[in-house]
Length: 122
Image (cartoon, rainbow, N blue to C red; front, side, top):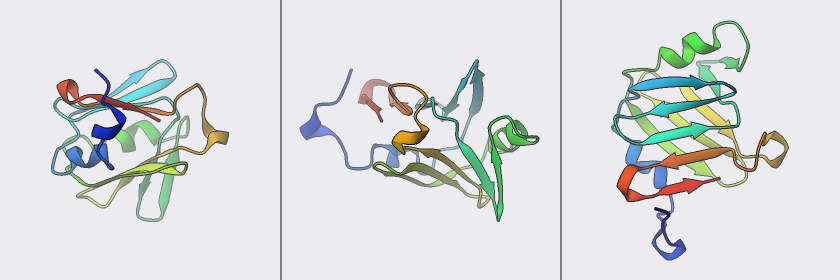
């Protein structure tokens, strides 16, 4: 089910605020972040930051940093069109997914499935 344009919330990811990351699933060359229901599929590889340090796909510690967010609560979830998706957690870490056209690896960068509330594609 896809939301009609006139029904689309300005920030559909705001429903993640207050939810914990329940799992990180690596699926070949993309990953899924699950929040006890809603699922964010990242086709463009996310980056993880903790303080001033950054981890990227394929670099040592990347998977560990993503998985360390499991059980952490989302405190901010924002889409900046043409720039990035940003999820901040209660431990100060941030997961970002670029929405820059230069970083797209497929026709879409991010898919957000909010179960029966609809889905969004960037």
